[in-house]
Image 1 (cartoon, rainbow, N blue to C red):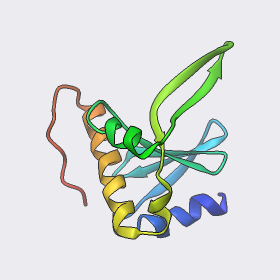
Image 2: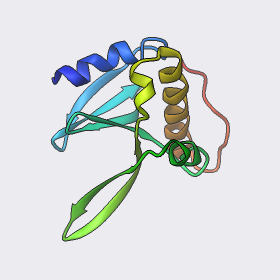
Image 3: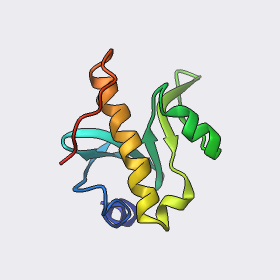
Length: 117
């Protein structure tokens, strides 16, 4: 486990229990068995959807992308805003947004958020 991934437990202390799993050279970050973030090259990306992506775009965050078969592929994750690393309340706001997007992507058509533990 990387030090950066371990540090995310401190960043999201107000959000609740998180854990990570290695995947494709990076890490998936989970809460209640649902992936709400990923880490690639020690950069944190948070899950987004059509409802939450405007917040990321307004903050200037870039979308996670990689090259597959010579083509750029964008995923529904955006770079986490820098302020979350210094402000636990702000980290909680962004984590809830990302988690809610993950819930909505698991249950397309449902706009309702799920109560977190």
